[in-house]
Image (cartoon, rainbow, N blue to C red; front, side):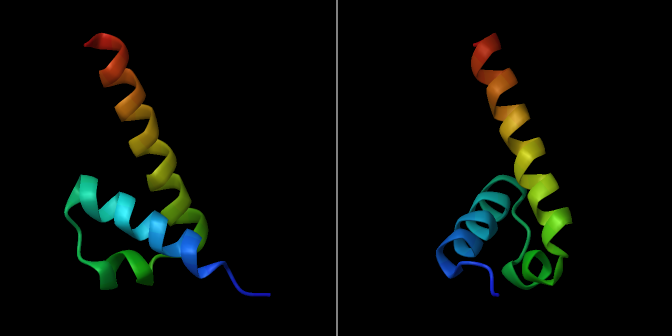
Length: 52
């Protein structure tokens, strides 16, 4: 089973947008690590929106 291409692009775009990391670096990450960064970025964004 493969990971949905659309979901992969969403994760890569999300991390690249927020951390400005190159696509190749993000794609080279193991899936659980990439998801961890997606989760942490979400937490940061939530915290910032609650403070603002």
